[in-house]
Image 1 (tube, rainbow, N blue to C red):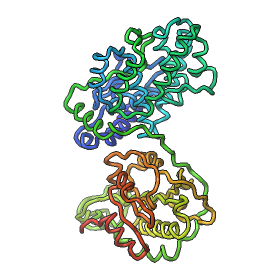
Image 2: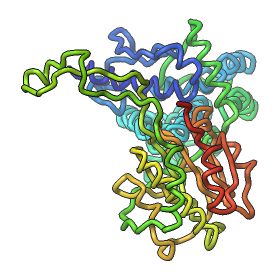
Image 3: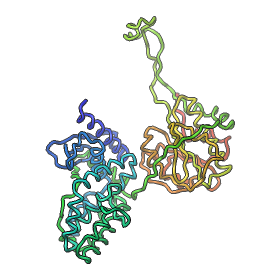
Image 4: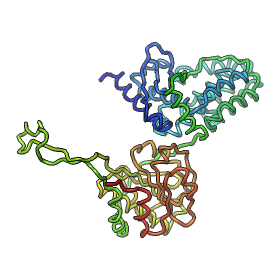
Length: 486
């Protein structure tokens, strides 16, 4: 398979994964399709079809996966924004198109990095390419400018690409390539002061929700009315989006509905740590026996030696019975569960003992049913064992540190384990990220009283139940993981 076909397969898979998260209903009906368009000089999409240029700022897109995926993520990020309203604001307010485009780009890249943490580095890769190609030109333009409108576009682009780690960065304490350092080279102090105010305004776009983007552009041009006459000093790197078909319109409407009110969140990646797996609690082993049936897969297809079809490989190998017959049934995947155990300060003591015992019981039951279990320990950060299994759920509580509570790690967990059911064992007291419909649907929470917050957990979990003692664990699991009918 050549490089173009390889990158196409990666891009198609990524596009459909993004679409399935932000617009799951549309994703059930249509598939996104990505092509490298030899005639294109920039990326473009109508939501379900995406066109990428063969080269981007001198980079061969077919041979640079991070840049190719980053361009794709950026373009699909526009589907989180009310593009028609943004265009109307530009026309009515007199805001130059480059200004609306840059504010929209800053907002969407902050949003996409929070919704899809594993893809954040691809956006950084695109920004790094632009920095390498154009930052020196942006900085020279700042030095040559004498008025704020003459340098405004260069100010915006320097902040966008001076530090590829962020969608926009001023950073008074950064190196000589950052925007703050570049503003010191502006000859006119009046223009420099105005440029700094403008830069802080643009930085604020990393904290707004997609639905707020048009109003933010309008408020920006009201604050800086002189920009109505400001020219686009340099072309704004990015793409073009035109929703022309019914599938594209449906995808955009659904994506905007699901994400439009969510402000960008800083994701907390799940870190890998070395651990020694301890022995399960005896109470957990006992409780696990009553939970096995909740994870056994009914109607699994099986096969016996019997007349039916010829197994050609078995015949060649000379096996005694080269005939096989599949029994009636329906294939179902084995259960996959991500168990997230809260070790925050509010859980310390008897609450953690109950929570850990319940988590271990569920993990043992899933394993005995032939399933896959991943264990996460979290407080204000989250960890997984380097073995990528449930080992951390069997840790010694005496060796733990107990911090605050934050559920931001879920943004990373939802993407890293897209096929797993998510089970939170917690008192539910902490900051939470926005949850897409599909994320919430596969997330459940077992709350450990007292002082638990069911309403808060209801924002990120479709099923929330309270566990007072282990005797109620089987009933709780009936609610959280109802068994399939036979």
